[in-house]
Length: 208
Image (cartoon, rainbow, N blue to C red; front, side, top):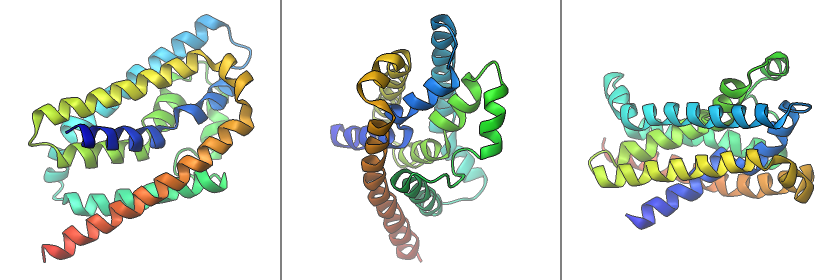
């Protein structure tokens, strides 16, 4: 159980990218006061937690209702995570998280907590895929499921803390440091994505 939780912690942390979220948060809240930044950070984390909670405990039921096997979703999730990993490694906007039009729209919005912070930056497609895959595989173990959601809460708490400490983090790390961390995390995510695809293919063809 501890091993599964640690594995999920690393994977979920890499997908959410709370460190590389700091420069984005700094840009979106540029010129705003501390009260506004605190309110946006808290609301974004709460909304993200609600979305992830919904997919964590209702995702398996949704897959069954749509007649989608966990192996099929594992393959699809692996491909999607691999595209996100390529975006992280090569610092290119692939559109897996947010389009340029959505970015332009976000700059005009007074409330940035739900879009683009909660979705697609925190509870984005990659995070939702990871939650669905992990909780779908552990749906028969109630204790493990609650432990895994505790990991989700921990990562969201770290994300909130980093957004609250944005000025300090930016002074220490800067945009370049955030990009270096993102590239290293992208390499790890790419390997994990390939493993998801391998596991999905093994399960799908093994059941034929």
